[in-house]
Image (cartoon, rainbow, N blue to C red; front, side, top):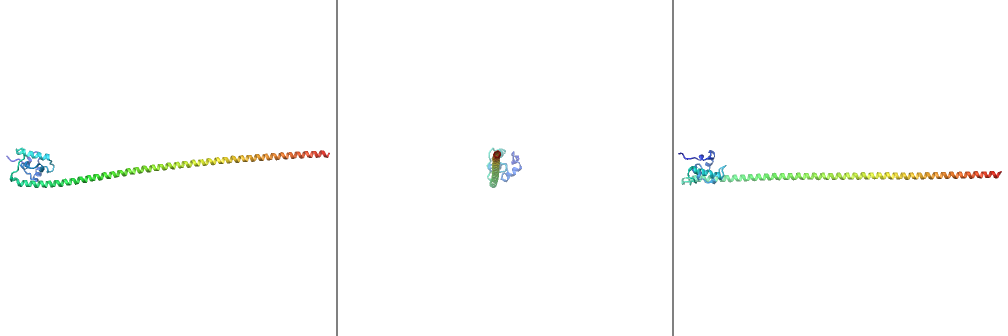
Length: 214
């Protein structure tokens, strides 16, 4: 019977087999003997999956345990160690790259959040300034209306006082004219009375002189 191959294990196809080969794992025996940490360095593998395929390789060999490589596999172990070191370095570089990428994303998010916060603050400040301006304009308009009302009221009061003063003056002038007219009539009446009295006296004197002449 032919020896089993790695692709005989469920879940391992040609692509995964090629990937394991780059780690120095090119047989079922090598897979059963490889450390879980080394198998887990393969892209798409985790510790649990690495342990699962390792156990599957051991079951396929019929050992039920991890096989210990023979002395003739020493070069293969060295290759595996070098592959592991390469994989570790690659993983470290990838981790570093991912960390840097995450930091960059975080920094970008922080910058965006800061920009958004600044924009929000500016919007709030602009809104508050507009509200204050509106309040100031309303206050100024109110003061203007109040001043205009006071001015109108003062003008009306002044006009009313002027009208009253004019009416008062007119009443005084009318009274004065009436008094003058009354005084004039009284004087005229008195003068007419005095004239009438003088005429009567003259007539009486004339009559007396006429009698005396007879």
